[in-house]
Length: 220
Image (tube, rainbow, N blue to C red; front, side):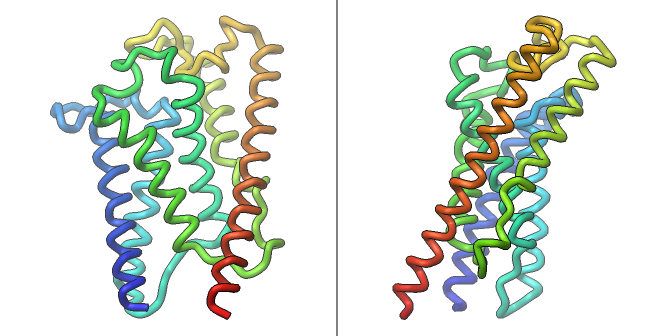
């Protein structure tokens, strides 16, 4: 158990470093500035949340000594899905459409926030987050963070009509641009995104259940 805890702590410290350095790059800390506009991007916000979550988990696990400390199962699931969405949407939908300097200041930041951190958090969720009953996992609650973000950024963009620096739009993502595509199309896009998020959540739930059963069978 001690070796397991040490490995878990080292792994989670790696997540803290990956997410923390990625966010620092994005908001300009290494250049001696603080770019508030970077916080309008889901990428930056999701990585910042992961940074805060895992700093907290590392501290709690150091203090708990022999116990393994996690947040509640659905909280861990929500944060995992949140950052997985960051990686999947960028690498599948956005990577070929957005100029590098509007999304990540360089290749290091791009890799950290869009690939490494999502992958590490997903692995952490698989390996270090246990659950007891399938009914405790409720993926529909995992979609709350991205949906809240979508609502926030649409209200912000329509309320300010202020273009994000480096772009010609108040919207950080093309698929929610009401000014360009209209409310009906954006509503359809959001509905599709919600369905995809929910499907991903349930897929990950059953993956977790299968993984847990496999580990239990190996121990018996």
